Image (cartoon, rainbow, N blue to C red):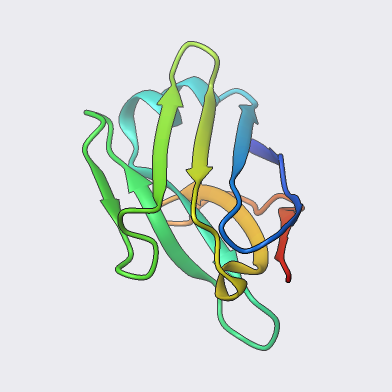
Length: 118
């Protein structure tokens, strides 16, 4: 079992920055961080959940075109925590952000709300 807890969201003006954290716990959490590709997803109102950034077991990163060059994903295996540094935020980044494996085969957490407003 793995449980994810996302935090770090908030209200920010366009051009601002936020750093999200995803803390994992449970009997399989360490294995997930060590062996699986994991990532950050987001779901905007009225839209489907989308994968925006992922990091492999070997720390190879990939990003959706919409966030490339602005977001940076990282992880700390020992702490079982993943991060998403978000810079140059835009209104279209407004969404609830979640973390999970790339296969999305674990239960979803509550997410953390990011609202970019002017």
